[in-house]
Amino acid sequence: MIRTRQLSYHYPNGPALSFPDVDVTQGAVLLLSGPSGCGKSTWLALIAGLVLPSTGDLTVANQALGALNNVAADAWRAGAIGFLPQKLHLSAALTVQQNLALSFWASGQPEDPARIKAALQALGVHDLALRKPAQLSGGQAQRVALARAVLLAPRVILADEPTASLDDEAAADAVGLLLRTAKQHGATLVIATHDARVAKLIPTDEQGQARFHSLKLVRPSNPLSAL
Ligand code: ADP
Ligand code: MG
Image (tube, rainbow, N blue to C red; front, side, top):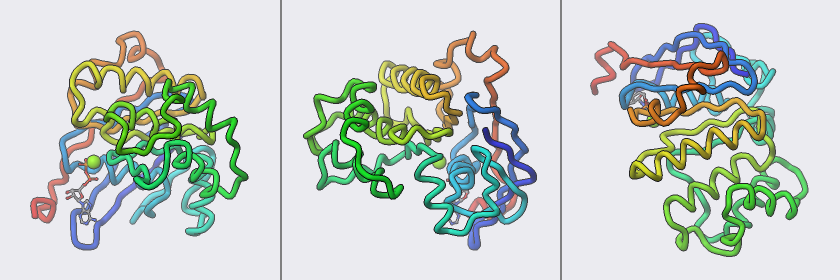
């Protein structure tokens, strides 16, 4: 679940962004859309507890984020949030399997090879376990990054521009995969995108459900944002 109230984030040398309140129940899907620069990635960073809001408060996966210091936020994030960043940030020197193992280390848990195998299998990339990221196609790398995101059974999955630079077919695969994976885990899913194709790729019956939310952000009117 994600609940925000009067959230804003002021970049020290940039725009002051304010965000509409949301109430997203556990297991629901939120499509976060709007033009480039409207604050989607910033909102994701707030939800992941990577930055603290300038004003307002938020509760994510039953945790009030204002109450956490940096160390506690890191530990919470490692278990509660599955992040699929726009740039995948797979370590080039490590194999696919080792990249997933890093998540266990980051969360202070002992590495569990069986869980790594299961996560890769669920996304159809287990045969790539011993490859390095440079030996993967874009779509394969994204599947690996999604396997890493859901490895520790997060309550919330945040996907930042998951269809950027994908052709129509790959974009449809990526969105379908995110929806299926989130559903399997009972996780709340946020897809942040400026890509108008994404709304059309989420099935109409899915969009008709009470568990589907759409939040459209607009570019801040603050003249600083144009700098
Ligand atoms: P989106 O993901 O919707 O494209 P962002 O959240 O990345 O939008 O950015 C929102 C606004 O904040 C933009 O105007 C961007 O230029 C600005 N911004 C982002 N990061 C910084 C930063 N580190 N310092 C100053 N301004 C920033
Ligand atoms: Mg962005």
